[in-house]
Image (cartoon, rainbow, N blue to C red; front, side):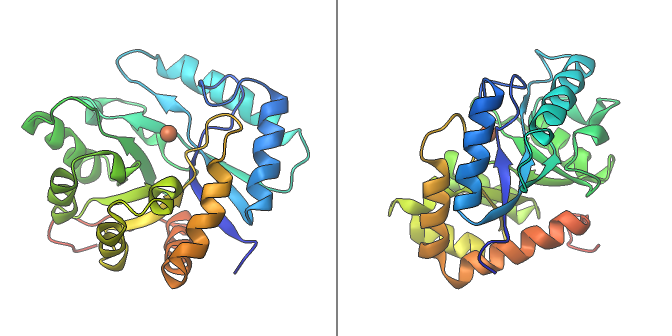
Length: 233
Ligand SMILES: [Fe+2]
């Protein structure tokens, strides 16, 4: 499978957010991704609903996407977003447009502030009312106990490759992958640092678990399976 990896979380669109400043940076990011065996990147610029207008977000994102596509890289780019969760997000009329391609999956970033019951309700309604399959961005960044509460509600997560390179909590992350709670791997690349080197290292460290993640990301790209809290499709 090497050479066909998916990066489920990346900031590679010039000017769409702070992750990429120009076409030259995007090109270097794409080259580093390719060297890590990645053939498909989900481009996930930040969207902060309390700060950004949806119209200007999509204008910026789609213009940047066209620019990156003109660079001639063979890496496939699928448009998405990293949407910061806020109370009432589920009521945003354009919410479906923030999904990943046409897959019906949406990458949601939890806030650093304490999670209120209303916030979690917005997350659950994004799935139940708006029929989007929620995937939580960089689950390693939060309290593991709080994240596991969300896993129990059948919410899935994406993990950053850098988290797997370090030994800290690796055992817990393996349990999350083995249990099917974490079903996506991302570089979360910003700029031209070592995020894709970490991605390569993570795939080596993960072994069969890495292949499992690639398969589940492939399945996600085909179509979301939206499950309610009881687990039925
Ligand atoms: Fe990110």
